[in-house]
Length: 465
Image (cartoon, rainbow, N blue to C red; front, side):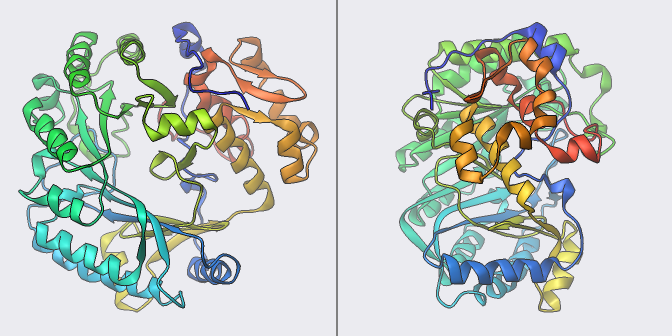
């Protein structure tokens, strides 16, 4: 495997325009829109039982979805509930406790956890007492490893005094701060007023408390944004020198996400302006010494993500790129998606349905999928393309017991146009995404997605760039 850490990245605007399209982010394969209703509870329980017998010592990853926000950011496409009533979080924690107990019953002893992520919504919507209660619930059911990676998404506008200290006490060592854009006009257009000094204060406080990795989320393509506002935002952000930066493309889908209907169409940047913003951001971050990890992630060379990329151990899961070896995920809370072995299981997206299932004493699962042999092999291909930018064919054939060129004959045909444009190289030994193809890795991965080819259009997905 070639080292990717220092591999150049070429930004070819013409090729990006030519090949850009709508597509999945591949935090899972098959993607969540392929999940089906049916005996999902029994499938999930069977997967947990199989895990108990086959790999009881393997560490787990935990995800907890905390859906509440007290204001709505107009761009947001997350599953969230806008309220200022903190008592609703107490009620929600009552039901999380029930769900945790149902999961814990499936293990003969407390399972070990090496990763924890609190997402939302806004996890920092919770009061410090509520955060203490949540952590007590988790520690009662699970044993956390000494070097567990514990991360939380933070809205710096909604951070209680002492919350970061409390979280650090419970082992939290990573944080992701939502910034999006620092321009006041842009912030007003998306209903997220967040002065730079508020963000800087939280970032500095986290570093003093020993959080070893700080990520900032930025978005390009928002209303009122321009190359000039992006340049100003980046100038300030780079002074803070976060360990990681996630640079997301805003997906304007008002037909799917009601808050986005409050965004004025005339305020949206034109496609050419959006592409120019991306080019500026990418160029600026690379010149500032950040490593392009993949898709929309950048990191400093000494960050664990960059090291994992260099060493060929980079992973991808429901939270995006990760460093630890792929492990089973138990996800708790409304809409959360678990993966145990070859089984995906998603909780009800509707809060009342989530509560109703737990009132009946059953896991609040609504749909899922048990992967077929074909799903598993394609999942591996897509993972290698997005994480390593290549597939080493002889090693892949040995691992999966297939003849690659025969098994993927239709898929390889779909790579021909990408080959012709120099985005991917295909030999008998490897499929390798080129320097200029790395920004379009999702497009390459989509050519191996059997569901896209055989069953459904990709029109429902957000744009890749």
